[in-house]
Length: 101
Image (cartoon, rainbow, N blue to C red):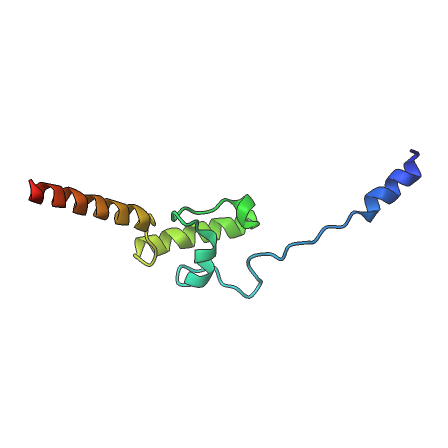
């Protein structure tokens, strides 16, 4: 295959460009919970820059806003509702066992 055919094959490839997750009008602030919650995992961890598709400056601002929201109790430090439910049911079953004995 000569070079002219290789160039044509490469140019035919198309990819869909993803939209940036933060629009130009969005303010990155600790009070903007709808924006901040998009960048936190189910466990309550801050997602990485690669996953978020953010610039370095945007990621820094998001991280600061999340930390401020956590300090002001707008966001939990850990999101462990499932663990709490599981430990609660274990405590109930242990309590039932000790009562029956």
